[in-house]
Length: 125
Image (cartoon, rainbow, N blue to C red; front, side, top):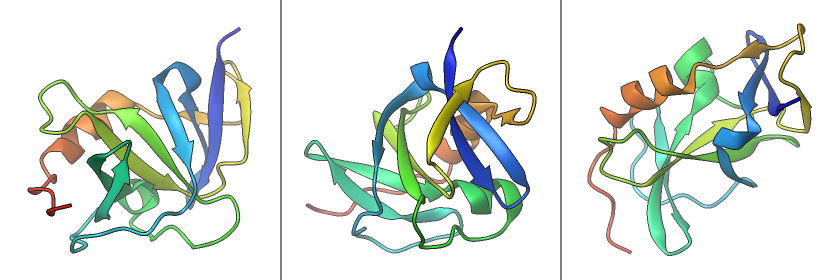
């Protein structure tokens, strides 16, 4: 049974298939100017990676800076100017089965395509 990463957004529990998760990182110091859903950029294996607030994208509420808030690094949409996108989300503390009826699976393709439109030029390293 495929596993999923569980997260808790303002509107309830969601999941992201583990096969779509490249890495999970803790809260990081971000550079650049925040703008709408973009929180900033972090250096991920030497590449500037945009970080978006997933809670703000879906629920219009900022992710709290608390235990369990993590940056989920996923591959960007194919037409994106960057290879990876970071999604800051609260309540990223465990995994669940893909068939868990208590969580809503996120349509990552839809959100990643939308967020690609919000990626500015990365700041100089």
